[in-house]
Image 1 (cartoon, rainbow, N blue to C red):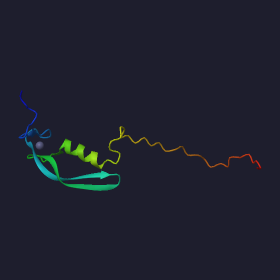
Image 2: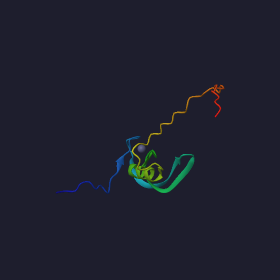
Image 3: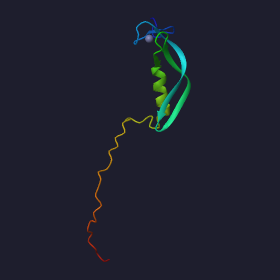
Amino acid sequence: MKETEENLTEYYPCSECHAGNLQPCRVTYFTWIGNELISVPHFPAWVCDVCGRREYDLKAVTWLNMILDPNAGRPTTKHRRTPPPLRPQTGTPRPIRDS
Ligand SMILES: [Zn+2]
């Protein structure tokens, strides 16, 4: 039995320039939650040492979205908001009944 799932010293080849390696570093991650700008300092990311391409750690992004999502835990994350059709305000005649 060999455990080969842990790759502690992994360097990803850059998919942008194919010359450099993405190296782990910490950056400040900015994201919008609704209309609030959230900044997360010391966020794990990978930066190419040649072209500077930056990729965020997918696991960390997923984790961040999970804790920031107010609807976390819900099965659907799709916001299906269809605005109601505009109704012209015509005075609809109502039958007047005296009680
Ligand atoms: Zn690169």
